[in-house]
Image (cartoon, rainbow, N blue to C red; front, side, top):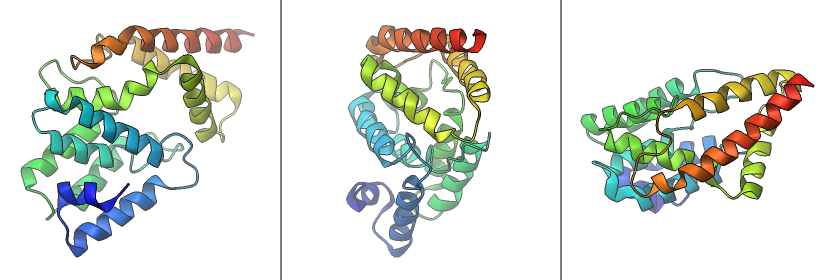
Length: 205
């Protein structure tokens, strides 16, 4: 992820350069198999595609940079810690109001349940969940990468946790909210349902 795209959001200063380098290092941690720089690049690209639906596209772009900056599969509070990392890292680089919005957006990715009138939240959540609507082969690669990130869990433990995640996603009243992304819904639900069926069979065998 080039510094130029970051500098367009947070300026070009020694502090900004230090923060960008720290973010890239965090997203490059060796235990990441899905939540890595490729995921960050994909989300930023999708935010760009969906930007017309956002009220503050630059706040959404900044939130994308931070939304998984802390990713420890042993923790359950990664979004909260990532939000605090955003609050600390952006202080003095962007206006306080935008920092607060970035923090709010990062916290939103814990459940991806943006309100109907939350334009910024809709763009970030849709971009983050776009992988769910991938072609089946790409979705399978995504699911395998998630399993690899949780390699410390037994198959039984992982299956139970993953079933809960899939059920939560399928239980959302609306999976995608922006006009462009709503067309992804059927493909995403088909992928989620297929994986859920597979895991349920595995759990019951």
